[in-house]
Image 1 (cartoon, one colour):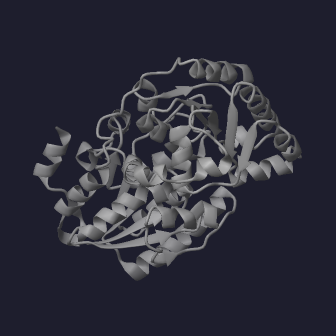
Image 2: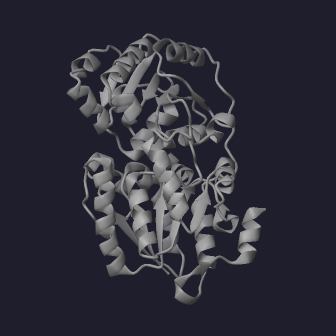
Image 3: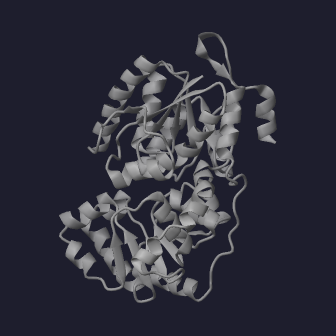
Length: 382
């Protein structure tokens, strides 16, 4: 079975790494990686390939950064050419970025079956670009691999045939489990002059939080408040950095005492920074999951989350972007008032194994319509 796995942005690399490794170790597959170029600089792309031990992409589309609709259109045009040349049996897309949407749509238009890894997640906030990507991708996908119970519930309520839905666990946790020991030997803390549990780690990149001057000023106020409680490490996303510059607020950011501003760091460095932080303050989706597995307090500055299990079972909390609310919660965490979260079901580092077991069971029938083995489906549903 010839499979094209699509990557385009940092979260995709983390999710595809264990899947591709498992595919290459399993007889009966020809696995190729297509990189759309959605994130294309060294720190946002190449370093992740190196540290996650992903081979160089077989195909690079080189789409680059541009407005969202244009980016989706360009990826679709270029990926359609790849589909015509490669004639794959299946396309695997992961997560909810523009590359996920564009390649799933292009594959569906070309009648190539699509498998969506991390299906069914919903924030129920359609102002989030990722929410639209998730909904459309799930609608056109033939096989939907789910990370948590809410995904199963959401797909059922949307009328998705449950014979196409598989609860397999979380491939992002697969990468975390595989890399944790290597990350522990990383020297990023010593290079920054930090000790474990003496700092809060901050990441911010979502448009609602970083695109306007008003929200950037709220971030600055929050950072000033947090630094009155502990040191802060802030790897600044390119989008966030550009926004600070365009609103003439970079100097104010640089002037905050007690904060270490970094360019985007590699995967291993970031895992080390997460695991050793007293708390992580973020608006990211994947970080909510990683901190839940690491049992590190996570304060997500959003009104909703598409990963509710990180709140109901994990170490994640939803908070407003408010200096006093966040500052008080950091002070409480430093005083030992933390949530005693648990690791959700099947977040055990073996999700990719389950996915490839399902794909291995798929038999080809007429006109390339693939049907999973009924026995395996029944067993996974138990």
